[in-house]
Image (tube, rainbow, N blue to C red; front, side, top):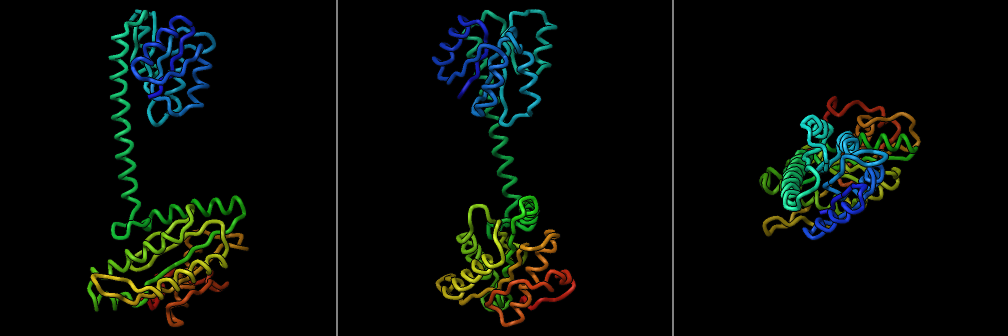
Length: 319
């Protein structure tokens, strides 16, 4: 673990550095508060700060205040070194954001014990961060396919639309619907239908660039969000997927099922005003035409599709 040590006394700094390195810490040393803050900003791996109270330019108390104002995560544990023994001074240091304090001259055993306590706090906080991130990821994922769920898709789409509007780029949405999915469930059972959806999810992920996204929009519908590309690129991706799915049967419990899908493609190219709902509506209208024209095909949104009514106001032949 890396420690930032800030002390303007070169002798004290050398002694403390030697102790810290002997205990297995990596030490970054600063001779004043200003240098300490610069080093802290430059190295996010620093997790513990040991700072002297009295230093030139910026003192240790102000260093503590600055660290806490950043609301930094992961947490930076701070120990204040002070020759001040009055309780009021100690309270000032803690109120400024110090987690602990040691009266100078330092006792090496006391400092080592205080550092161990700091490491426990840091480890606990890291566990909390990991748990929180795991819960966040779980909340964003569809439990069946592991893809982004509908809410996460809209969140990603809003961010990409904002970026596209700021940069003048184009964003493409591809709506995908499994053909005759009700028949698959009725004929082979819902567990087989689930396997088909998981298989399609894996194929969709395999063609994405790192900055694209795909998720389960609902039922047997999926949505791909392709950043910085036009409808021609979206059509090419969709056509490649369509052909791949139609050519390779899905294997479920030793059986091979012929599965196809229909695709609707819409891109924001050459459009000044657009939002997430309008883009999805245009892609969905193109998908509706693909289904109506016989399924297992790709349709690109036309001008009229951008004015199509919301999907809830009409019934698409998605069975």
